[in-house]
Length: 332
Ligand SMILES: NC(=O)c1ccc[n+]([C@@H]2O[C@H](COP(=O)([O-])OP(=O)(O)OC[C@H]3O[C@@H](n4cnc5c(N)ncnc54)[C@H](O)[C@@H]3O)[C@@H](O)[C@H]2O)c1
Image 1 (cartoon, rainbow, N blue to C red):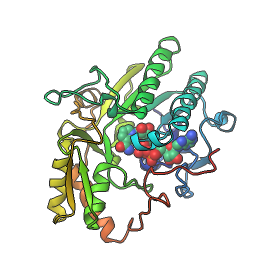
Image 2 (cartoon, helix red, strand yellow; image 1 turned 90 degrees about the horizontal axis):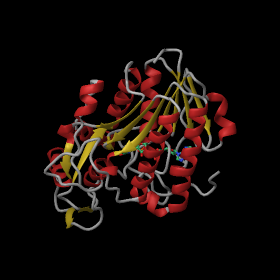
Image 3 (spheres, rainbow, N blue to C red; image 1 turned 45 degrees about the horizontal axis):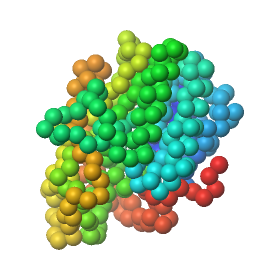
Image 4 (tube, protein in one colour; image 1 turned 60 degrees about the vertical axis):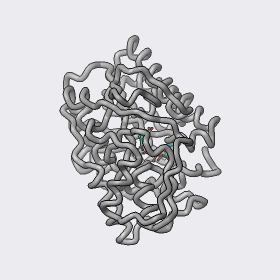
């Protein structure tokens, strides 16, 4: 990765994309962020070395001119999460599969310098939690969301056999932490906010395992991936830390150290979400020398502090603030 290369972030106004954009701008890269603000979220502000294009990434004629052999393309866009993809299955397939394939074809035609597709550890779905799953483990998708990710992963693998474009798939753990485009529909963020505000919180599937990773660390992981000179032409990495696999009950106990929980938290049992997986992240550590810097306690503390400073108090799902609850009506 050279300094004169452009970083193209598809989905750059999202929860993770906003943090990744700022991370690369701080390192003096030129960032082009392409996002259609599907949740009516705020447009990113003007900044030096930064261009924001308010567009659907499927509008190739509009974005084609920004992508060339010198581009590092980070693919974050899509309908993200099980609930939102379940709510809009047709739109979800269109964005997460049809449009994604169209866009990937463009990147291959242009022979971009590096293509990074952000996937998810949700692909592992359900596993024997006595053992940690790794990149070679069987995938067990339990949702449309994960099925679409796996379809794209397979497409990229096949495509890469014929056309040599450096391609890396990063399977992210579940994110937490602060971002300019905040999401309170993610486990840790949601639990902290509800408990802080003394709202009733029903915790389902308390004993199920999941890996977590701070949103800042994802930016760091992408950076390590881009900077690795002799990275394989095609590879897959889990992104997170072996130490950050937790059950929901573990997370509640951690939050309790910061905010004393009274009787507003109810454990409901094993009903809603059957995902259960412990993930091994050793490959990323060994090959790319990546280890997360921010632990769960850090994330809890920063969200509590933001709430104490009266941020994010006006959460209103019908207004669609701070989460992937409802997409805008005038979708183009
Ligand atoms: N947040 C997590 O816990 C998590 C975990 C694992 C993987 N990931 C992956 O990371 C990526 C980013 O997730 P996020 O949490 O930032 O989600 P997000 O919903 O906040 O961001 C997605 C962004 O994509 C944009 N978008 C959607 N459809 C678009 C389209 N057709 N054209 C242009 N822009 C479009 C949205 O406006 C949004 O800004 C996703 O690929 C997701 O699968 C996230």
